[in-house]
Every structure is written in structure tokens, then in C-alpha cells.
Image (cartoon, rainbow, N blue to C red):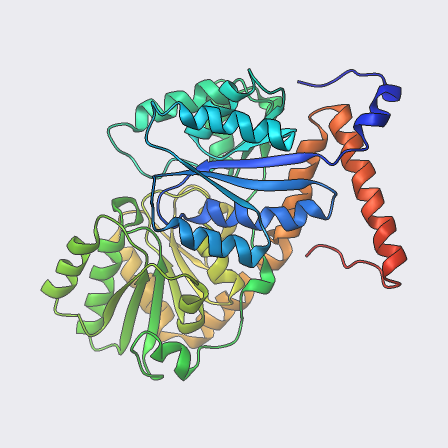
Length: 418
């Protein structure tokens, strides 16, 4: 949906700052996509783009307060809309009002429902439509319907961002025009992650002493994360005499089932379900090894976070992982749903400090080189610029103004986005 307006007619338009509205349905405290969304506004602001994060959440959801605190820490504006289900038309009304009040230029959706809402809202408020495909990792009886809605909407969006190559390929197979697709990986704000070795205090936070080798995992306690495999693997290593512990951070419907598994294996003193943690960095700081046991993933932020924290990683070979990890170079990759292979890889890391250090150092270098957040946001802004000539002009004018203002107020040049 490119504009062919005459450049002279863009002078007045270019005076205003473009406004991007990130939109997503969320329950509880959210996950990886929410981190990406909430980290985006400060980077967009550097290019003269205003931004807010709109989340549709169940009424009185206590987890939303955590997202509000995260937004405050990143400097992002967050807007919450009560969402009582698929037939709650008040959501459409509220979205139209917000888009009109904020003069939204770009609706950036992040799931099937916000994709559908964007198409509806655009009938009442003209704007560009962009969506990010984060991938389907939870499969329920409703998933085929959601996937059909997603495919229907994506074909009608101006631009589609895919966080992994497999998602890009699936979109092409689904009939989404290839010239609208952009493969842009997830990324990490490097300064948020400490690379210091774990200390006594770090491990004591989870009830372990400094001599215990700690394995960590982070994610929703649901079937697709494969935590039952990880618990079995760690139990085998414990009963074989290895002085190790496991901490799993996250909440979900399988909590009681996983705790029962831990009790039956008699490893309650070694394996802890820590629940949701406001700062997942507490896990990375405490552990010696990170394990992803998932059956399905896109390009998981938790692996990027562990690598940014300079921790060795063992991961299953799901979707985006081969794009991130080269086996035995910056991590170990094992087949999905294979406990013996997972056991052997974890045991190798437990026994070899040299291997762990090699993988950890190379993992951090990988994130620094290819997955830092600033580089990702530059690619996102290029997608916005490509929407139309008027939007490109507005972004350029505002970025130039900010650069001139910065030079006048500070003799030192503005540091590049890392």
C-alpha cells in the first residue's frame, strides 16, 4: 500500500511526528513478545517516532500490573483495554477511539486477534498495517481456527515481519505475498544482562549453596516447553551422584503435574519450580547452564537472554534454534522429544568447565554480533519507512530535528544504538 503523493504535498504532513501503536492480546504477565514490544518505544523515539503499547487483557487480570512496572522501567507508554472475549465489541470501539485520539499512522499487531482488529479499525481510521509473526507454540482445539484467521489477515496487511526463517517460509506457503515479508530476528538489550559468574548470593536466592551446579530454565509451564523431559534428565543425573540443582521459572497449567513428578522422583530438595519472577535475570545470574527443552518454539528470547548473560546453553532443535546456535560452537543442540540425547548433552556440560566456558563466551559474542536490539529496531524502522513516501518523509524530518537538537544541547555526538 504505497503512496504516490507529490513530494510538495508532504511538507505539512512531515511536520508531525509519526505515531506507532503496538497491539497484542495478553494474559497474565506475558512472555517474550511483550519484552520486545515494551523495549521498542525508546528506540523509536530516537528516530522521531512516538509509540504506545496497547494490550487487550482480561478484566481485573492481576498480572497486568507486572507489565505496567516493566513498561515504567523501559520508559514505554502502556495502555490496557478490558477484553471480555471474541464478541466484546467495546474493544473495537476503544481501539478506534485511541487511534483517532493519537492520530495513529502505523498499527503494529502481534497476534491473530490484534491482526483482525487492525483490519476492522482501519475502516474507521486510515492507517498502515504491520504485523509480527511470533509463531504458534501452543496447540489447542482452537488453534486451527486462530491460524486461519491469522493467514486471512496477513494477506491483507501492508508488511509482515517474521522472527525466524521457518515462519517466513510458512507465510509464503500460506499465500502471503513474498514482497511484503521481512525476516527480522528477535533481539536483546545487552545492557540488561550481567555476564558476571554466579555468586553465593545469586544461588542462595533460590535456596542453593555456592557449591551446587545450577541448571536453569524459563518459560510457561505448559506442554510445549517439555519441562517433564528436563525434570527426568536432571533426576537421572542427581541419582547418579552429580551435585546439581534445577530451577524452572514460570507459571502455567502444568504446575501441579510437574510438582507431582518432582515429588515422585524424590528430588524436591534439588528441583525448584520458582513461579513467575519479575526479573528473569535473577535466574541467569544464578545458573551455570541454561537448558531449553521445548517441543515447539520460534526464536526464543530466553535462549538469547541466557547467551547474553554468558551462560552455556543446551537446546532442542526446534524452529528458530538452528539460526541461533551452531552445534558445539556456541551451544549444544539435541533432537526434540529425546530424553537420552538431552541427558548426554547436559551431562557433558556438567562434567566439563572448559566446554561450558567455550560455549558461554561464543554465545555472548553471537548475541553481540547478530542479535542486539538496536540493529533489530533499525530494520523495523526501515519497514515503516517503506510503507509510503509521506511516512518516510515524516520519519526523516523528525529524526533530523532530533539530531540537530542533540548536537546543539550536547557537544558530544549521540552514541549509536547498541
